[in-house]
Length: 157
Image (cartoon, rainbow, N blue to C red):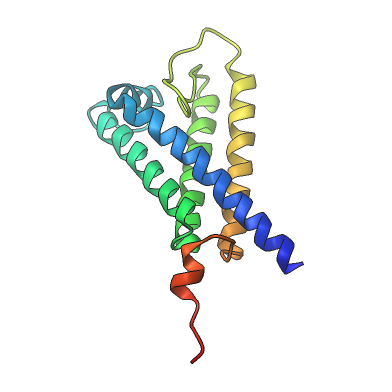
């Protein structure tokens, strides 16, 4: 059973690293657009949206690199879980306020003309799955091919 959990944790770590890495990389390519997308949510003052958009992009990239390396896995998974909860709350907020926007998760976001409700369900379900992967890593941070094993395990002498 430990064998299966270790490999499941490894898969969760790699998937989260790939998702966060791609999302962060797309945002870093156009930080102005990342800020504009944050502004569409109307959750932070418009003058702060650019800073928040850039910060999110670099945080996602940093988390992706740490997850890929398997370094500080439990702590990084906890930050990733917090990020996913924030994303879910932001999307739910937009949906509850009757706004129609693209989340901007993996590309530039924008105002949609219609059909956003279906997109919100998909976005929230996807982020819940990522939250589940992060929660799994919080409880089972030991994974294959991780620097944590090398750094944290004590060697008997």
